[in-house]
Length: 118
Image (cartoon, rainbow, N blue to C red; front, side, top):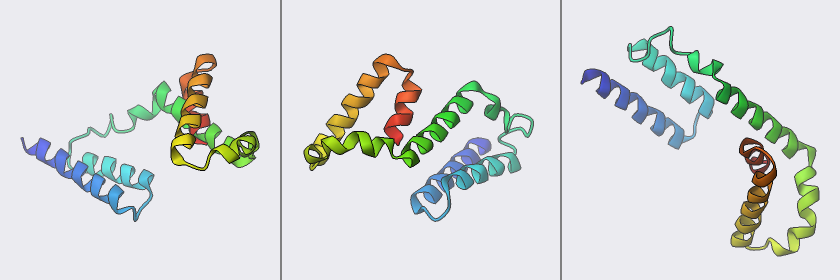
């Protein structure tokens, strides 16, 4: 019971820190993991085991690709002809959703997510 209270306390502190938005989210997450290790909720041998999982590497790679696409300016070039139609947020959401759905037909969903994030 005490471990559960500690876990919920750490989670509540993490949510509060994320909502407060004073520190970077990755540092907040790392602090939460270190706090869970310090109080004994997470065994030290298991703490960083998740970083070796394939999905973590795939999502991290997708975020890197997304940042590269965003910085390249390709998205702005492709969207420029649609700019007159993107005055309202509903049209923006509709076009973005349609583009991601179309991309998901031909490429893996994680890549479509990367394009949507950029």
